[in-house]
Length: 433
Image (cartoon, rainbow, N blue to C red; front, side):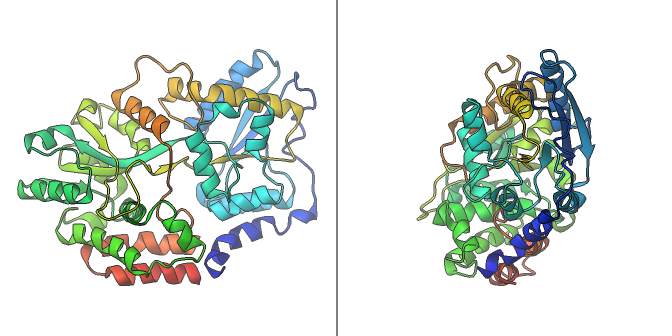
């Protein structure tokens, strides 16, 4: 498949030199005694004071109480340098016990398929803790990694439309359940001088997320996998119809005049300052929603509605867009009985620790959630637990080149400087190139 060539190029370069040998630095201290200490290095795109390393450090503190001498080391690498770093470590056969996965799903799958990364569904089942992982998280990871679970879900995010309850109530707007109701709500807000949507045109992906969701609602949850597999093209009429629907929102001015120059944080601020009625975003934003310094409209004033149904579409609003952030893999070579015991402990305790320490919902189940969880966090938790069929996002299965083309041109789709047909053609050409 030509459409997969670009995506697999990163994976191929990452693994081509794996036969060169080298020492196993990642597992040298891991230990063969399951009851003994474990030394875990985590190659992470987050600093030691950020979410994942902080949670893992807290877990290791608890683990070391029963396994004296155990320790966690966080090794930071910028996300833009991650693939190159993994390539180097792969060449040296020195991948650490834990490492953030490559930036493309194809490279992630290739690491697992070639035996570099552990098959975690198999191992967690063997360890008796697969039930500690949310079925939705497993489903998302498998969609990204060729039907296998080669990653740990340190995050679990849903996506949808957050809205200002007071603005909706003051203007007689009910939660939109269909695309027609959503556009009617936007028209009402526009007529009252309220910007309907806030989105970052600079980032691009908050706009293409809308496009992907419309495609899922119109054509079903496998619509973009068909494109990635070459069974359909983005230039096919139904896909262009979806791009036209998003372009129409922009043509009517529903994103405001400055969308092309708006960064992520200012776009979020428009919503949290009550200057925009709706904000499509993932649940990672709840951290800001729960921050009284950033949120001027109040957390209790924020509602959530799934992306609405499209008339005549075969998809439905129960097919929730989800992601697991940048997943984390386990080195197959560094896997020892001591690492297995640590992994079992991690799977059993990560969900509760993440929620209690950081208010972070992960792909691991929390058995004893804090009683004082913010309302938005509870809302997200309930949505995740109730999701039966998660879907991905517009560029999830695309090559790096196609992703870049899509997100760089997203704002042009809204402003009309690029037609829906030309936009979809440009991304399709990048997939095939």
